[in-house]
Image (cartoon, rainbow, N blue to C red; front, side, top):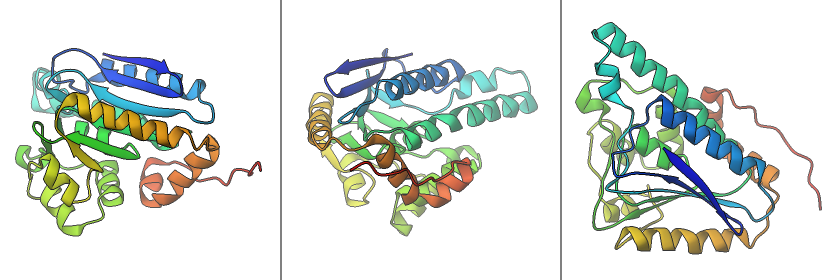
Length: 238
C-alpha cells in the first residue's frame, strides 16, 4: 500500500512494492490515512514528499478490478466508486497545512498523473517514465474534478490540449518545457534527493500551515468549487 515516515520536518509518503500502484479502493484508503496522519503531526516547517518504489509512480485506477465485475454496467459502477473515493485524496492534499512535493520516479498515468499534479511541486525523472492521460485513448470521459485540476494546474492551453485531447506521453524534459513539472532529474535517487533539498528549503521558512493551506486553496477557486472545498480567511498570528 503506502507508508508514512517522518524525518525531522519532512514526511515521506511512499507507495510501496514493485507493481504499478493502481489506485484501487484499498490503496486510496491507505493514502487518506497517511495524509491524515501527516496533518495530525503538522508543525511549522513540515513538508510532505510523495514518491513510489519500482517502475511506476502510479498507473491510475484499478481498471482490472473494474473490468472483472462481470458486465459493462457493473464495471462502470466500480470505476465510478474509484472516482468518488479518490476525490477526498485531492481535497486532502489541497487542504494540507504544509507544502507538498511529488517526486515522480517512474510512469504516472491517468489518476496517477492527477495524484502527482495535486502536489504543490512536481519533480520527475528524466531518463525513464512518462506522464500520460489515457482517457481519450480508452474512450473514458474525464471526471469533473480531473478537468478542473488540469485547468488549474497546467497554465498552457496547448499543453492541456496535448495532455487531455491528444493523449500525449510526456517525458521529463518536455514536461519541464510545458510547465507541468518543476525539474527533471537523471535517476529515481536524484529525483528524491532534489525533492528533499527543496523540502528542506521550504521547511526553513516555518510558515503558518493553516494560512499556507488557505492561500493554496485561494489559488484554485474553480477546483475548490468542483470539490466543494470552502475557502476561509484564517486569522493571522504575527
